[in-house]
Length: 119
Image: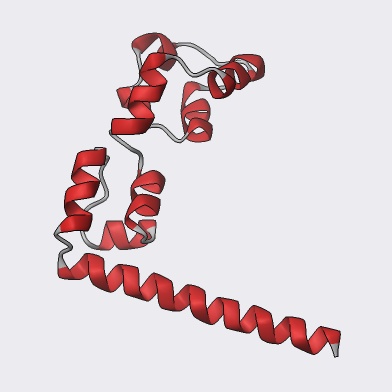
């Protein structure tokens, strides 16, 4: 598979990976080995970043769209994310609240549907 696909499956930011990883295709067995026995560079990258958008959004508890709307659509390190969470700007508080409310509504709808089908 392409390095970009492998990086996505590993949840890492491709430009931050070693050149050897970026320049070569990754087999399924190599990907499995990276998952089961990650090398030091992969462990470090997962711990400290920089992290790709999906990971940043997940760690912040918001959507990727909220990142884009607030011009934060860039890789962030774990330290950057921690600082944002400690000193939440208004846009981050609003995005976290909106996502939480959306999930709560979705959960209520699913519960109501489940009740209707079991009756």
